[in-house]
Image (cartoon, rainbow, N blue to C red; front, top):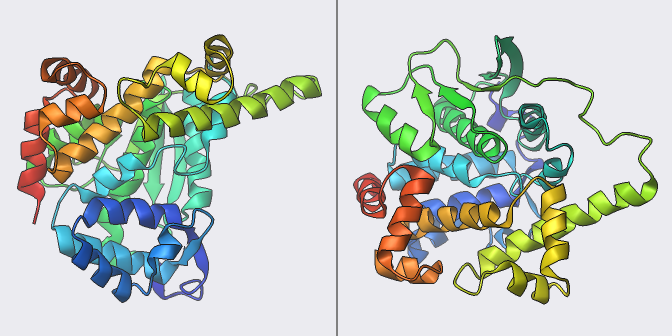
Length: 334
């Protein structure tokens, strides 16, 4: 029995954030977006409600329509790359232990399955690496490859926020996609492999997965507060990524000081500049794909003094230039 035709098909099990992100990627035209919502029996108000859930059937219909609408071979991968810890509601993992990123990566990805149980995850060891492979638990039909790409894109996004030691293995994909996938994922991609999997540095120990129980309540409460502050900082950067996006400005808007904010970020294993670059890189890819702004305008919008500075930063983030990234997006457009 297929997952989208099972008894669970009508149950509201899928967080609406997944639908909202895919809709933004696949539908820039208001009319086509409206038709999609009608066919999926969704309303704009539902997409705008962060607490809402949609049914499995609605989600699979959205997957089908999005693929038909865009005809982009990389849509699933690009969609997955938008699904970071924050999108999955797993931002708290960045506070667990910053000294064992491989362990956090594995556990974060395991918990991803609780949010989106469309495929199974199996973790095995291979020398100094851990291999997190995808396993079929439902017949996913024509959406299977799209979902595989989405899972691997999201797993790679999560891994890249914690460690740079990762590779992506895929079973059967067209050879011409390999270089494109490597540019998007920012890591090595191997086709023709036995499994669809992510390879990361193997966890060193399992003892540091949780905050020690002997920590005083005050310390644990401090970690929870830190998690909330990191989330709020990310939100401020997303809303205002330009030249005013400085540590002191954000600290002021939060009623705090730059020193205090830096301490919270340090406790979470994050530097403000890295967090800002992560958000700017994601927004840059989005603006380039949409094609509404010139590269110079995107540079200004993201706080760079000139196009050359933005191009240098974008190349450091992605390994390619903004112009090439835009041309790639244009060739994938319907």
